[in-house]
Amino acid sequence: MHKFFKFLTSRVVLVALAIVLQLGWLIGSIWTISQYHRLASLILVGASWVLSVHIAGKPGNSSFKLSWIILILSVPFVGIILYMLFGRQRLFASAEHRHEMIFEQLRETLVQDTKTEKEIAAANAAVARQVAYIRGKAGYPVCQNTETHFLSCGEVYFPALIEELKKAKRFIFLEYFIIEHGYVWDTILEILKEKAAVGVEVRLLYDDVGCIQRLPKGYPAELEEYGIKCHKFNPFVPVISAIMNHRDHRKIVVIDGDTGFTGGINLADEYMNRVVRFGYWKDTGVMLRGEAVWNLTVMFLQMWNTVRMTEENVEEYRPIREIPGESRGFVQPFCDNPMDMETVGENVYLNMIYHATRYVYIATPYLLIDNEMMTALTLAAKSGVDVRIMMPHIPDKKLIFLLSRSYYGQLIEAGVRIYEYLPGFLHSKTFLVDDELAVIGTINLDYRSLYLHFECGTFLYRATAVEELKKDYLETMARCAEMDLAFCRSFSFPVRVLQRFMRLFAPLF
Image 1: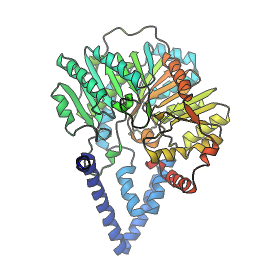
Image 2: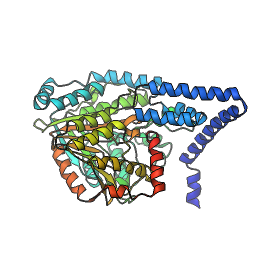
Image 3: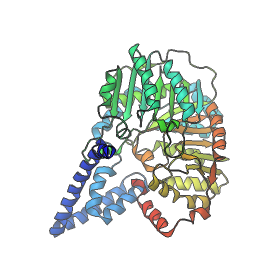
Image 4: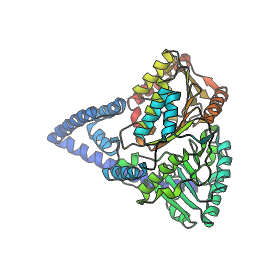
């Protein structure tokens, strides 16, 4: 009874209730007016058509636009309100302007080494175009002189992170979607306290929605008492606002400017399998040491300066320890955001698929894909490329999993092979192509990740981590079951109807 009362009075429930009441009042008011005033009803219907035409003419993903148009024309008084609140992909002008202004200030620190650029162009023209795209649209250069270490699960990631945190001499930056008290975070927090006490600069940025049920509301002030600078990204407030739709889904650690971590792993016990929620939690990450870590440093500082309203000399955070000089391959950490209407994460994935000659291996926890991604995957498979997608077998979100499975049939008919990870939940977000190209990061194959969230990834070409990722894929596939058309046809009629209905609104999930 005590736990139930605590849940009812929790911040997430109170905020959700306040938003539902506001939304209900808005919809109810418009519906009442439209029912009793014929002119108002006609105006509402006319507005729904005008807005639909406006949406159709805007640049952007056709699936995303179509879902909103269907909703707006079907239920005008609900659809218009929801679109104005949640349908716009961009942030408020002031937030966009500040974010871009800060990046322009930092851009001059992201200098592309011409020697590296020439070497990658000589090695592979298609890859050179990929890195040029990332450089042009995301702003981050491709680097050499960087050690890469693939981290195959939370139990490997956590000890490596702890070891590097203990070595910190100057500063530690952490940016995560989810942080929760438990063995993992409490262990890290003790190290951060110790480091802050001896003069190491420690900064923590976390997403408020991701942590709303996991950390207390005043947690930043609590950490500030220990000398840890802390800020919440986009604090969740009980007011309906389009900006609430955008979250910081990135996972970044930078230590002294020369060591960095990223990937799908958050700082909570289930990610390291200290607690069991959905069977075995399979996740991955990558550790970088060398020149490419500067990309992660700039990513963090851009977000930090945006939310803290600060400007500082980022050159102070350049590495001072020796950078590896003979590391293999090319490394290009990059980020994506919902403000420029450029789906960098998806375009990087599409480029990899279209340039594959032998195989494409994908690991993702969600499979809500648009027509562009469906076309790329099926065309590659029909052209003889071995396309394989690994998904979880035990989901964390059952409705989303049911919707993800609705895409299986079309993909399998085209020759794509789909596997489900039998031991539990696969949360990894990785692409691997032809033993040479890989992306390890935070970018899921769903609309929220590709269009609405702040994300990051690391593009790798002929780096050591690519070989290590290939080995992990093969080992993980051995623990999967392959799906077939018979499985897809085994769903009951009501389930298939539900899946098809949900597909209409897949971009809104």
